[in-house]
Amino acid sequence: MRAIGEALMIRNGKDIADGAVIETQVCIVGSGPAGITAAWELQKAGVKVTLIEGGPDSPGSALDPTWPAKSLLYDGVADGQFAEAEPDFLIRPYNRAGGPWERERMFGGTSAHWGGQSRPLDPIDFEKRPGFPGWPITREELDPYYAQAAELCVLHGDDFRPETWAEILGAEVPELTGFDTTIYQYLGPNYLKFAQRTFDGVTIADSAADVIVNATLLQIDHEQGRVCGLRVASMDGASPPKKATEFTIKADYVVLACGAVENARQLLLSDVGNDHDQVGRYFMCHPLSTGQVISVGGAYLTDAQTRLMGGKTLVGNRPVTWQDENGVRVSGRFSPSAEEQKRLGIGSCWFWSNYGQYYFEMAPNPDSRITLADTVDPVFGQRQTHITWLLSDRDEATYTQTTQLFKAAVEALGGDVYCQSWPSVKQGLTVNGHHIGTTRMSADPQEGVVDADLKVHGLDNLYIAGSSVFASTGISNPTFTIVTLSIRLAEHLRGKVGAP
Image (cartoon, rainbow, N blue to C red; front, side, top):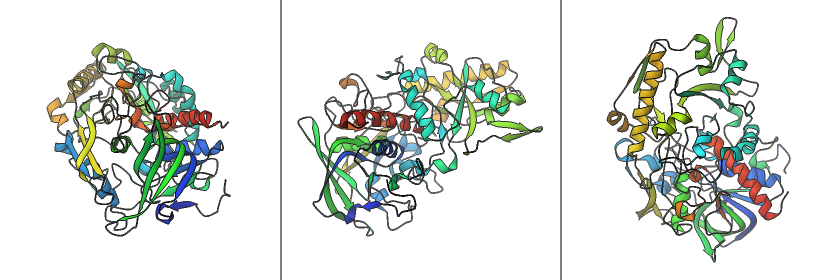
């Protein structure tokens, strides 16, 4: 590794000669939390890693004339549920006041605007049940990697039990009939942005990994069940940008880590992994209502229970937000228990004390999907994205059943709950930044895109990282599980290349 304090060794694709060939053991495409985590773990084990990113090495703004390529390359067609609430989803800022973007195209990816909210998926999320296919792995198999992810993210350990946190905060665990009290940890501010943060004292750019920005994947060349090369291009930085150079990367193993939208698009562009028409299907998210749709009146929690849900401890007689020496904070949520989810045939959701928005687990829907648009981008001439977001009757049942369950539980404790109707809630739902599915994990190639090791079915050396491999969304924010799966993938690839 380079010494701390030396200049960052990030290469720009336009400085790589036209026609050049770069050889490496593992090439990772995409530098968000998935890609950077995998790259860090691999280079630490002595694996030769090349990490490429299509965007620049620092964020621009929607008005920055240097990098308008985000909107040019990400544009396309968004319909279905998007048509009413987010027709510009593919290129929109994450909030309409301007940046950060729903889909970041820069070094560090969406960790640039990640809030750090972390919790493992629940055991039920991995189980097969009506409307939910199950994963080919269990939560128990992921537990050791969740522990490693908690350490990598510098969380306050990997214990998320509410009883543990009630003891830490000097608070009490609420008992709400039909619901579990769940605890979320939030990363400290120094560990949010994966491109700038340090791992064991150095950033990923200071590590042994070869980081190349302004390097857009154009084509995955493959033959006889193997990826034999990646065609990569750079832009010249003009406004509007034009193609500058094109070069090839040859790797023993390739990992796509471009996010759920772009992972699917890249496979479709190269006609890879789609023998059973599964690529792009099951686009999911955690739909979030626009504004307050649930009103809670009356005191149904004690002061000590309220403090647990708010992540507060007592200093004297005053409740104060708790945080540890690394800036980690916590808060609580109410989610329907696994027993209630199975009994009612629904997904999960959040209720957050007196918080009025609704956030829930979307059921997998094969018609909610990504395909290729008929239009092409103006920089590289590649087909753009056509994304269709569709909800299902099971999503309506999740809303109706969980709100009724919450209302009954709160009223039993002396409170009161009012919920808007599903049609009024549905018309204002937004994606909320969590893009999930489209290359889901499955044991059967006819039911998904990657296997339990995240290898694309039918190819020996192509893997996918990120939440596109999730077979269901669960209710936890996806990034912590993305990091967990990337640690597990790096371990698998170390074995493949013979590294310790």
